Image (cartoon, rainbow, N blue to C red; front, side):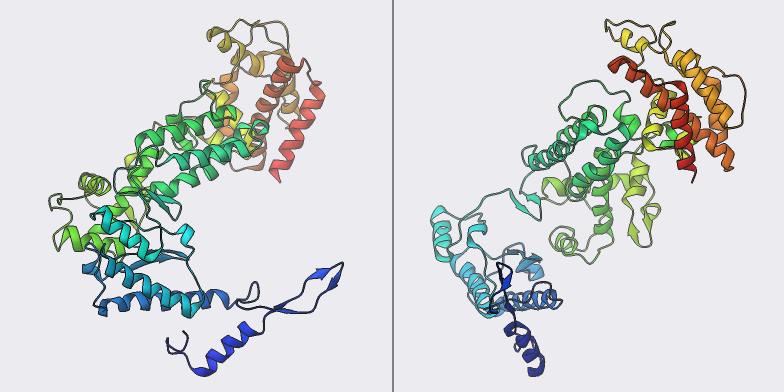
Length: 504
C-alpha cells in the first residue's frame, strides 16, 4: 500500500519494522511471561498510529476514485456532477453508486481490494445497503451478491438520524432519552438551584446544540426538551409538573434583563439554520454547499432565485428563511473574522425584556452561586414564603416560624422579623456600618448601589447582603422542615466567613 502511494523503500522498511517489532508480555502471579509477538497492529499509544490510519484512508479514497475508469461502475444519479463516490469521517464510511448489480459489485470489489492490502475489514454485521427506485428482485440480487443486509431510513450516522423526510418526534427520541438519562444519572436531588442551572447550561444544552446546528428541529421536540430542562431546574426531576417560580422565557433573558441567559432552543435552532443560508450565498468550499449549487442553484443568485423544485423539507426551510437576512439588510452584521456568528443572529431574533434596576446586584455578584440564585428569586418576590403558599390554596399556618409573631412574607422575612433583623444588624456591625435595619426594598437599593462600586468595602457589603438573605432563607427552611434554628451568633459567623472567603 505504501509503495503504491509513492513512499520510498527506506521509509516503508521503517514503518514495517515498527509493525514487526511489537510484542507483549503478560504478568502471571507477578511474573512476566515470554514476549508474545503480534500478527498485526502497533504498540498501544504509538504516535505513528494516526498517521498510518490517515494513509490507509487516503489509499481507500484513491481506490474508490479510480472507479470512474471502471466500465462496470455508474455514479449515483445525484453524485455524478461532483464525481462523488464516498464520504468518510474517521472509521464511519458512506459509499455511493447507481442501484444496479454491476455498479454495486464494482464498488464492493474496490473496498475488498483495500481490505486485502491494508488489513482493515468492514464489520458486515454493522453495515447496511440502502436502495431506492429498484424492484424487490433487483434489491435481492444486490444484497445477496455483496452479503450486506438491506437497511431502511432513518439510520444513524455520526450520532444523528439521516432521513429522506421531515424529522419526526420519533426520530429525535434518542436525543430526548439521552437528555433524561443525563438527568437521572446525577444525584440531582442534592444539587442546589445554582448547581442544576449550571448543568442545564453546560451539559443538557450541549447535547442538543449539536443537533440544532444540523437539522431544522420539530417544535414539539424543542418544547419537550425545554420542559425536561425546566422541570430539572426547579425540582431536580424530569417528570415533576410543579409550577416554575420564574417562566422559562425570562430565564432565557440576559442577566441584565432579569434572566440567566439560557438558550431558547427554537430561536437558537433558527439562528443555526440561517448559517446554512450564509454558506450557500457565499458558495463556501464545503461538499454539501457545492452539491446544492450543482443540483439546485445552478449559477443563479441564491438571494433572488425562486424556490427550486424537488427540495427536501429541510432545504425548503432554509430557502424560506432567506427573508430574515432581507429584513436585517444583509449578512455583514452577523459575520466576524469571515465566520458567521450564530450568537449574533440569535440576539437579533430573540426579543428580550427591559433592563432591571437590580441587574448589578446579580451580574457583579461575587457571592456564592447558590446564594446569588436565591437573591435573584428574592428580588422578584418569587421565594415560596407562606403568604404565597396560602395564595396557592395550601392549608398551612401563615405565622413566621422564626419569630412566631407575624405572618410570613418576603418583606417580613427580610428583615422585619426579629430573628433575621438581628442577624443583619450584627452583620452590619461586622462590616463597620452600624445603623438601623431598613425595610426590604430600601436595603435592596443600598445593596444595588454598593454593587456598582469596585471598592473592596462595597464589594464586601454586597456579598454580605446576598449571603445574609441566603442564610436567613436556610434558617427559615430548617425551621419549617426540621424544627431547628441556629443561634444568631452562629449564623453571623458563617456569613462573615463566607464573605471573607469570597473576597480573597
